[in-house]
Each structure stands twice: as C-alpha cells, then as structure tokens.
Image (cartoon, rainbow, N blue to C red):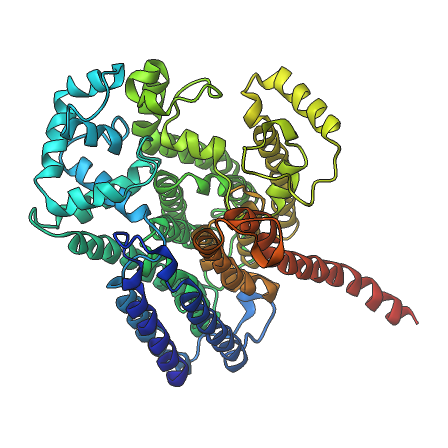
Length: 597
C-alpha cells in the first residue's frame, strides 16, 4: 500500500509541476503538455485499479449480503489510515496546481464575491459587470443604456475593479453573456470561501481558497463512505475506490469543480436513508416500529434519520439539480420500508424542502423570462432563439459534449440543412435526410421550437423517456428484494445510466456515481473513471489539428473528437457492460439445465 501511494505521490507531483504550463495568459496553446499530463493520469489510474483489486483481495467480504458480513476487523484500521493519509497528500499537492484546461472555478470566484457584496448572482452577468466598469466601452444599444443606469451593477463593477484577484478572475470567466447556472447552496459555499480572502489578494489566493473548500467536501465524502461501509459491516479499506480515484484528484483538487459539494450531500443523504430504513444488524425490519423485535425507543431515531435524509437530499438539489433523479428510488424506499404515513409525508417533505432551497433561482428565472432582453445582453440574442436564456436554461437546451449514446440519436435526427457551416455530417448517420426532415417537422409542429434545435430537443425527450424507463425498472428491482444492498446498487445504476444517456458527459459529472461505485455488482464500472479522462484530448485536437485532418481523415480538430473519440472512449465499456448483463442473465438458466441433467 505504501509503495503504491508513494508512486502516486510522484505522479501527482509531476502533474503539479506541468500544470503551470497551462496558464491562460500563455497564448501558445500548442506548447501545453496535454498528452504528457494524460499519460501521467493514465499511469495513476492503472496504479489505482491495481490498488483497488488488491484491497478487494486482501479484505474480502465473507458474504454476498452486506448485512451478513462479519464485523470489521481491527486489521482494517492501519490500511484505512494509509489510504486517508495518501488521499490527503494527493489532494494537497494538486490544490496548489494551476487548473488544467478548466475555467469553471473563475465563475465560482465571481459568484462568491457577488453574493458577499450583497448582490443577486441570478440577475447579473460577467459581461454586464465589465460593461458597467467601462460605461463607454459598448455601442449605444438598449443593453448598454440599461447597464449604465443600474447603480447596483456599477457598484459591483467598482468592487471588482478594486480587487486585483477578482478583476483577473473576471477576464477568465467563459460564457460571460449568461447568468450563473449554479443553484443557491453552491452559491452559499462560494460566498463563504470568498469571505475569507483579503481584498488585496491575488488570483492565486482566490484559486487556492476555493479549491481548499472543494477538497474539504471531497475528503468529507470519503469519510461518509467509511461510515456507510461500517454501517453495512463491509471492510473499511474499500473506501480506496473513492479516496484514491484519479478522477477526483483531477476534477476536484486540480480543476476545483463544485460537484464535490453535491457529491458530499448526496452521500450524506444516502447514509441517512440507510440508517433510517436498515438499522445496523437488522435488515429484516420492514417498518417503523411495527416489528416487535424493535423496541419503541428505536423508533424516534429512525424518524430523525429519515427527515435528515430528506433535508440533505433537498440541499443536494440546491447545490446541483441532478439529485432529483434519486427521488423515485428514495420514495420507493419510503413506501416499501416505512408505514403508510411515512410513504405519504416523507416525499411531500422532500419536495417542499427542495422547492424552498431552489426558490431564489426559480424566482429570478421567472423574472428573467418576463423581462427578456432587459436582463440579458441583446448582443447574444440569436434569430433562431425565441428568447434570451439564463445560464441554466442555456445549458439544458444547447449543451452537448463528450457523449456517445445521445450523439448517436441526435445526429440521426438532425437534417443536413441545419448543420453548422464548418460541420460535416457524422459518419454514422444512417437515416435518409428526407426522413430526418419529416421527423423534425413533425416534432416542430408540436413543440414550436426553432428548427435548428429541433433534433436536440426531440433527442432529449427520447433519452429522457429511456432513462425514466430504466429508473422505474431499478425501483421495481428494489421493490422485489428490499435490502440495503439492492437499494445502494440501484442508486448507483440510476446515476450511472443518467450520465451515459445525457448529452453532456463531462468527466467531473461521473464523480456523482463514485461514492456508490463500491456497491456496483460489475467491476467493469471501475473503467469509466479512467476512460472519461479522454475528454481532454479534445483540447489537443483543437490546438494541433484545427486546420488539417486528424490521422489522414477529413475531420479536423474538435470535429474529429466529437465524432470519433467517444466511440473509442465509451464503446468498449458499453460492450463489456452488455456482455456482463447477458452473462449474468444466461448463467442461472445454464445452471438450472446442468442441475436437471
């Protein structure tokens, strides 16, 4: 364990050293060592896989059922200490690194400073702050007049200009025309982190402070995984599956993505749910006090854990919207494991708490729709959009990145006439253009959306329907055998397939599933956190092949990545998963036949 951890320390120290060649001020993008960094991360992932499977071999579960596993042995303690010690060292090294090919953290800094100054981050945009900072810098448009007349935005612009670190960060925020897409709970974390930074601090101080906050949530999640393993009487060293994952090092400690906040809250909600419905050592209990084996005094704590799980899950939605996908499975647990009153009241409490947490964002989104162009820069209004979008709406309507299943469908629905000027038809399109036009025209007649986005909107509905079907299947699978093992596995599969069916498969989104990866029945899922790092090849192709075809093909730059790399990235994993499912389905019948013979 110590040798493996030492090797990873050397790798992450090398990544730390290379990260300073990714300064955004350096316009020589071709000099960025993207391939070298990816090679180091791939080596780290190989060591991580070996460490995980060695841990599973050294500390096996004595039973396929979590609840029947032997109590954790004292021998688990020292490996657990080594795992956490090295996990903290890995993260501390990369906290001081420069973000590699990621800029989301600069928006967090501006949002946090905006909230600290008493302003609403859902009513302003970075481009409006910049315009208010230089009133004569924009043409004489309605937007420029509106900005120059808003005293609060002028005061915010002055505050940013008075702090060199903030002014520097503002220049690096991308998609500056949109309001922030981040919900209120994340905004609160940003604000607390920025409150600790002195006014005269430089950009590095802002970056390190924000990343330290992100990493604290990350390490806290690892601790929650240990508590969950302990509750289920599983070997504690299995936390290595989360604690040593290179994806968390890159996306949290280096890039500083806010997803560690929501991952922590979701993991805490899952732990509270398991404690509420499956008391330690008594998986047979199926209600709140109706079983005579449970003393009356144990009922109250179980209600406490249930309410806490609802509160934490609502806060998770307030940090990032995606945890709503776990609502059905959580409600099924309430219905199956609790009384009728619990099954009715608990979901209602969850919905109300989520609405309360999200209300500041919902209220301002409605206000933005009402005011239209007055609250968003008219210079980004395109004729193919019916209105100016807020940040969260733009993400939901238009974002597509590093996807395979969604891309396969959307490209077979998109007519040739709406392709961008420099974009070729995807090589895997098999539907005739006439049929694609008929499908999109039929969809447009119902949705009344701009034609250019018809295929994307229709695909979202189709993939959403597939996901709803899968989510319902996972709920039914849990209903048939309502154990903690099945519930945790179904929770993992819900998150995992939501990610695979989404149009945006950013690698940091896969961290949503990582705390539950230890409960996945198939070890093939371990590969995903490694292969998804291929996402960063997109920047390499953009910088080095923007004018010429890649590997002799007629696809240049990002087109090659979008239409080719996801097949290499996710295709083998999906094939292995399908093969694993078929094997598991066929094996029982084969065993029955052999038994009869």
